[in-house]
Amino acid sequence: METTFENNFKHTPVLLNECLQALNINPTGLYIDGTLGGGGHSIEILSRLTTGKLIAFDKDDDALSATKNRLKKFGDKVVFIKDDFKNMKKVLSDLGVKGVDGILLDLGVSSYQIDTPERGFSYRFDSILDMRMDKNSSLTALDVVNTYSKEDLIRILYNYGEESFAKSIVTKIIEARKLKKIETTGELVKLVESAIPKKFWGRGNVAKKTFQAIRIEVNGELEGLDKAINEMIDILNPQGRLAIITFHSLEDRIVKNVFKERSSNCICDKTIPFCVCNHKADVILVNKKPIEPTKKELDENTRSSSAKLRIIQKI
Ligand SMILES: C[S@@+](CC[C@H](N)C(=O)[O-])C[C@H]1O[C@@H](n2cnc3c(N)ncnc32)[C@H](O)[C@@H]1O
Image 1 (cartoon, helix red, strand yellow):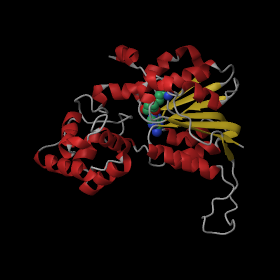
Image 2 (cartoon, protein in one colour):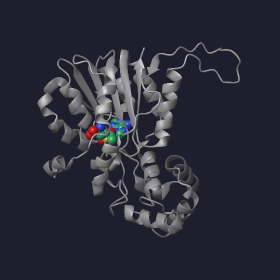
Image 3 (cartoon, helix red, strand yellow):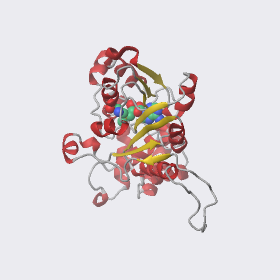
């Protein structure tokens, strides 16, 4: 199982050249990959380092063990950390790191996670409802679907999935779970299908938004993301870069707002006629508009389709 899963661990890195350019890599610098996954970005960063080092985070044990092996040739140039990147500031401080030259976040799930049925992320397979990136964390998709209140489920589907049929879907979920526990991704897909009139199914899978919403809840993906990004900016060395790839508008909005605030000389409410905040920008926006995949990349990797890359540089 271990070796086949290593071979199966495939993830095509998104916006690879754009990220490498964004990080403006100094061969002797210290870099952080907050979302190691299959190591596609990490390998290329490491190949550009001479005496520099990379610290790579992931909270998925499968990603860490497969990718550790893949990056073996880089020896002690790379350090692996099993933790949430939201704890980066503390982890780096415990390691005695005072500042870093670049940080990359490639948010969301890896292809390996989506394509492995037993991880329970995908509506394409019928498997147990799980969706945990960290298999040691306690909350699963099964818990969310079977124990959350009607109100909480509606809020999650609206807020995290931007699902306009949230109420009808949740009504079906509540009815179904009165009869028996909802156990599989297949059962959840069927409930979503029964809640949305066929003419509104649109392109892509009808359960996509529901699955996204539950996955975000299970992994606490948006919770504390703004705080974590602010802390990452704090630990950047002067001229250090932070590059973040997002895959949906909710994440992108959080990144955009933090970057906007940190790059503004005044964050006063617009109704105040003069500045009272004394806020000083400590970063510059490297790109005003997010970078998106080229047509070539979109043709070669459909999973890059909603990717947006935002970059800032510490002053
Ligand atoms: C999109 S994949 C990264 C792919 C990687 N850049 C590559 O090229 O192979 C995201 C990875 O980050 C991990 N991840 C997502 N959120 C995380 C978090 N808050 N803390 C640590 N790891 C996280 C996931 O487990 C997954 O392996």
